[in-house]
Amino acid sequence: MDDKPAGLGAASLDVKGQQVSLPIMKGTLGPDVVDIRKLYGEADVFTFDPGFTSTASCESAITFIDGDKGVLLHRGYPIDQLAEKSNFLEVCYLLLNGELPTAGEFAKFDKHITYHTMLHEQFDRFFGGFRRDAHPMAIMVGAVGALSAFYHDSTDIHDPEQREISAHRLIAKMPTIAARAFKYSLGQPFVHPRNELGYAENFLRMCFAVPAEDYVSNPVLTRAMDRIFTLHADHEQNASTSTVRLAGSSGANPFACIAAGIACLWGPSHGGANEEALNMLKEIGTPERIPEFIAGVKDRKYRLMGFGHRVYKNYDPRAKVMQQSAKEVLAEVGDPNDPLLQVAQELERIALHDEFFVERKLYPNVDFYSGITLSAMGFPPEMFTVLFALARTVGWIAQWKEMISDPSQKIGRPRQLYTGPAQRDFVPLEQRG
Image 1 (cartoon, rainbow, N blue to C red):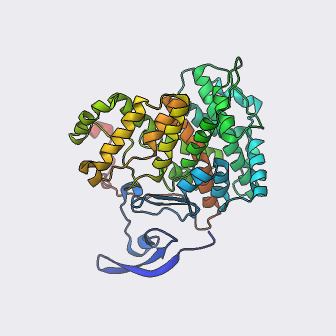
Image 2: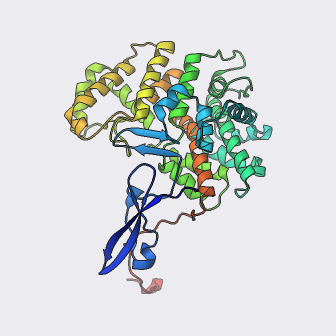
Image 3: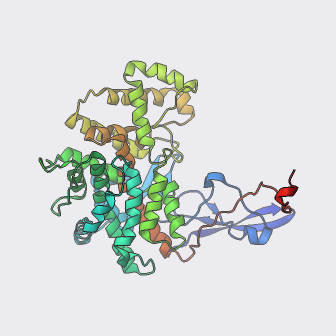
């Protein structure tokens, strides 16, 4: 990193009577940070922080979140402005390069991505190795990891040009792989990308076109898909991003790192939350059942999915944009009086005014509306996390590239608080009572 955080003096820590001075660092935004890198060497102690909730694992200039205020910035730009006024590929350029592109820069970037969307012809045979009922996320983990076997000319992480090529390849080929995972699960033939189509439109066509009938583009659905990609492009040091950085810290190739991120995202507490939120709304069924459900949540009989967030203690800024997309999509392809949307809106209204939820800061998050939107667009729940992975790839790549360029980066090696047996001598089998 070129611009190091400014120093703010030091914090003093008393460890068994020994005074240890720890530098305090200040970033552009957010809380100050106590630098504990020398704590073990000077005082022979570690810090204990399960889940790393109070630990900064890296320095980054990509994304900033203020959970208390409901703020999400990409390179300083608010997410709602990017979702409304920009497009996904422009946001990709911003995350990768630090600034919004000029018209010429964007045209060049768009061309690079467009002409990398094809997969090696032999790669299509790879899908046939999976069972016909394989989960699309299982296919994604295997397929993305296998990219390094087909594109080994861009796996040298020490070559800036190869890093750039691999970044473009991953962003470009992820929609093709995701669409193939979807088609394979349906038993339908693969649809190749078309260079004259935009990123989101191309993906939708690869998912829904069939040999007997081509896909007719719908600008409302295309815009909604692009917006969904934008809203999920990056989210600071979440579990999957931290996994990508940890894998990358060992020197692993970018395809392997992104496959590791996809595997982490597969967890229901991370990428699968929108599917759980949709299932909850279906279980409630009608607005009339909401009071009963709310009472059950308070009595801990039911879980309120799609509300609250590990980081946000305010309204998730992405949820506001997602709510509007849900309304637009349902108005275009479904019933604007769809019971699921009615349940979602009424549940949101009650939760935002009920003291039980307000006191616990359980505000709607992006998953609350994204499941409804994706379902209306024709995607089954098992594809929700695949779409998340597709969108988050650019964030993972930007974070990986930033990590590779950081001279202070070391291989990840968390410490532990050991609570097992102390050293003891081995006892032969015949002597054990």
